[in-house]
Length: 315
Ligand code: SF4
Image (spheres, rainbow, N blue to C red):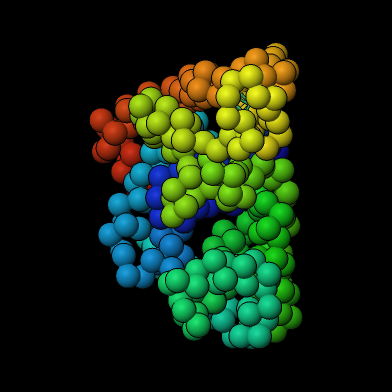
């Protein structure tokens, strides 16, 4: 049976956090284990430079860190090929050819790009770089260079796949049926809010729990999470629907625990400190196997480098 090739990737700008874990990594492992797919994961270091051009060391360092996170979570290099974008110069070459098929106006209208530019005002000021504006073109090269047919994405990434499909159609119209038009698979991954209640979890926002965090770091972060602000004393009646601790209990605690937590909180029979300690313990327990595997790979960096070299060679 011919396996369907799927492509995913991440920009190596920092270690992966639980938002990545629930948002995409779990889905990738599920697809990998289904046996129906031939998964490729791109570590997009060239793309990471589009908004980190002034900090190449950060990108360089995080290529290996992201690879260790993948392996620690259960991405299996025997089933999934992990490769590094910058080590395949043909991707950059294709990007140049594709750039003739996209107008500046079209890129500026792309909703995903628009949102990201607005978020990066501090870096770009009033004038965004040509490289950043054009990253969907480079992404089209990432996808088509490998004849990627199925691309698991979140809903917010759909405009990037549509952009790629447009490039493919225009290219094929001029040069013949050369490129494969990709299809998005909605990953249904959850978008995880930050500890501070922000819709997005991220390093720059200081509201993330990393897969590599120590037990002490996890506990410290959980103790700082936002709770129901109207609750001052333990016997005040609480509202778990506006509490980030309850939100994370839904991700990391059993259904039975969540039920008890909500009942006790609403009845004013539960202290927030105890509630946070319980959550911290559950997160620590869930991430323990990931941390243990990370410790193994940190002690065997040559193995990680070999996996990246082999994946890139195959790609
Ligand atoms: Fe949140 Fe728990 Fe405090 Fe209720 S008791 S407000 S769920 S931390």
